[in-house]
Length: 160
Image (cartoon, rainbow, N blue to C red; front, top):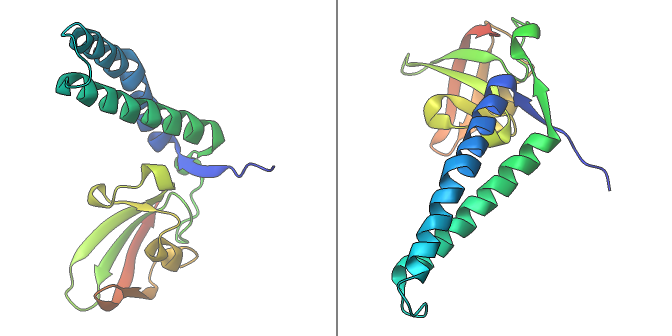
């Protein structure tokens, strides 16, 4: 079985490592203590605090496993060393202007697990990122969004 290495920015890996450390060092012990306290209250069948704490423990353990696996298979890419500008590749920070509204937006193309569209972090496997990769500063790109076709002008491409 071959394992596919997934790209991740250095900053994204650091954020995930910090989350993993927080889950292991503070959240896991806190939940274990909450389960012990709820267990002390007696009958576990009708103990809502116990069941809630066990459910949260399952979520936290699942997230710990997900983060450990993601970090172990990650190919950490130092975006600052790429400097492929004006071409868009993984890690690029792209400034776009909507050709219709003139609204400007900035996104960075990152790995799947570190993506957060509200923070301007666009998953490398998203259709929008795939439509941008390989383009150059000054190009225009048409993207078939759920709301219809959107046209963006690529104003700037940088790597930090």
